[in-house]
Length: 454
Image (cartoon, rainbow, N blue to C red):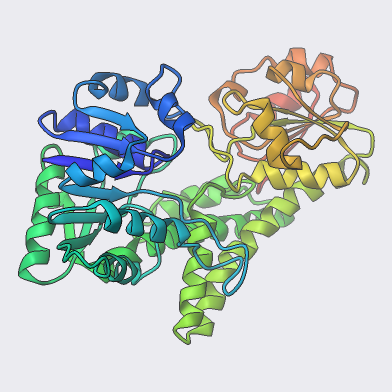
């Protein structure tokens, strides 16, 4: 069996590497139009940072895992074609700001229709709206050569930072297909691949539409929990309660559970906000405005939490950060990844810059040029924005420190040394609740945590 994955990004690369590792008898080809990205996958410096990924790729690369820009040839030879291209939120036209932009999905479908010969199983790996399979089937069925295909939905449930472990030991693998003899056969073919290392009871099969919708709903429910506890964090600050203690208390209820009750400056990443906005657009499209409004409030609460954090910094620094240095520790949307998409740090930094603060950013995995471009746009500059090469450099001479990514190294810094190099009073704003605020107060810092009394 030969597998081809179109798209060498955060989903396609790690997923295919794991399949190749666990199925050494299968030929796995990852293809992409981006030659620089393919070259990076073939090098010692992979295009994405993910703990454990280097080792997985090294074991399989050159044996049965290959990376290429020759999309046409790999489509022709493949039995199963995974589609793992980007599906960003539309920025134009009908549904702008909410609907998924399916131009890359359509382009891939047309490319497959142009080059495919013989029967194929097409697997949707990208996060897509319900009924996208109809679009793919329509395009493939219109190529005039009688191409026989089965379209399956196999959404990814990877958390960046733990993607390798999520692939190695998943909670579940979801596969949706048509409820026909041909569809059932295609589903079983894909099931047999994952069953090489995933217990059968964790492989869930559904109809096509249930699988497509489940990905959006899963992310919406997870994001809803974060926004819910973040809304309570504001109440905790007003009443003197501690949000971590509240979260622990309610998390011990077996009906609720402890996961995704960690209050913070706000969720980010490529999935949560995009998928909720897509879900709200789908609801409105099907005449369900009340349902759309319900889910949209999750995004509204998340945006408010980011603004609230930046506003707290301004307020505590005597209602002005103009010409004051603020060290922002972290720019990735979460630890153990170099992904900055929808990172809370972007909003916090922009809000501080708009208040004329001098913002100095440090992140251990995000390059300086990406931080600059993410905040200002490619090629733009702002004399009030600098990027440091270490946390100590960022904090030197800062009036305040804002922790916005929960990197482990930020817990281990010598805060006595940092305090000695800061103007007084010196402030710490912990947007991830990872620091020992009591210990910092003993040093002399004025400290503020999310959902903690000031």
